[in-house]
Image 1: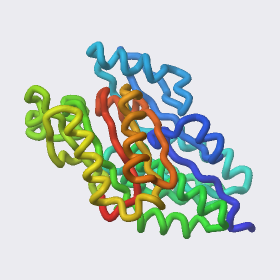
Image 2: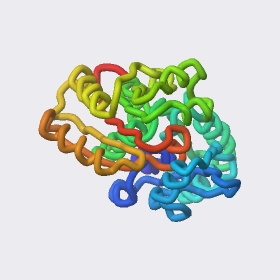
Image 3: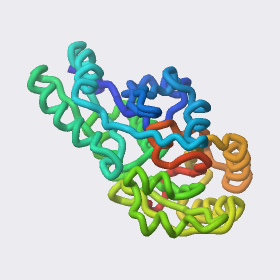
Image 4: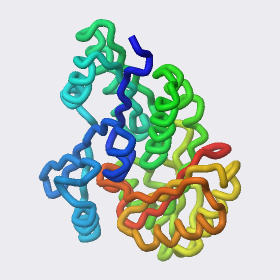
Length: 292
């Protein structure tokens, strides 16, 4: 059996644009969100509700909710791959923000029993959005160079604590409402014009790390953190993500390019699964650095 005979699977929370999904050849599991009491599945191409419509509804005061991936979805996605005689390396959304990874471990054990000789390795990314995406991108490239599933899983577990997520949010009310931040932290960000800054921790949770007055100061903070924690910018892959503030994100990309000259720079929009908890006007930069 060829040791490279496996498929890399991840969640739609990696926020890959559709063309990247095609280019990398990864399998993406859609995830569910509810808005106005109607359930939608979010795919990379946002086929059931466009990003624009989703964020317009959130801006108008709608409060979306999300659910974790259920066992049936794992069976539906994993079974055809295992039937083909291939193994699965599943890179999951952070266990600090969702029960997705835990659920996948149960599904993996069940399916390994059903398909003897097949393996399903589930790795907790402890990352979100492009942080998860960055690990998937590295995994695909390692696979292309002949790395085994075990080698890639070990690399992810070794490097996930080095994925920096420096995030500027408009306010913390969505994060608090979705249970992703305690009330005390949320209240601290309510003052007029104050923009909170957050990071993803080593446990894969969200943590406020500061606050500034106004977006301009917030963007300066992101640049400062990039300078402090990006080891070798010119050899780095940097990824900018945003929620419904594309022009600002493009400007930020230009600034990163001129200031740090990264080897690769990507831009994508955060989908409804994470956007339901952050709200609009999030701007973040992600890369492999010294520490989270």
